[in-house]
Length: 69
Image (cartoon, rainbow, N blue to C red; front, top):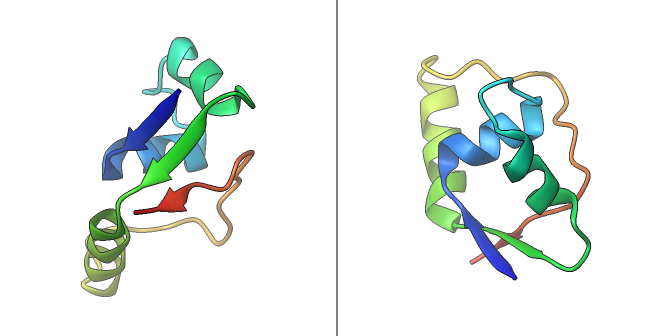
């Protein structure tokens, strides 16, 4: 299955946020799924972080590297 993450879902996944459902976590770690992240989401994260509106952890913990589209 191909899964396109929005910005918030991506941030929840990489920060292991409790807001993310167990079902969603299972989808993200399933090796049969392809995980995608929009380049617009990347842009949004960078802009908000640079404006001080989005604190980010020093290191994201990814179990699967998303592909940008």
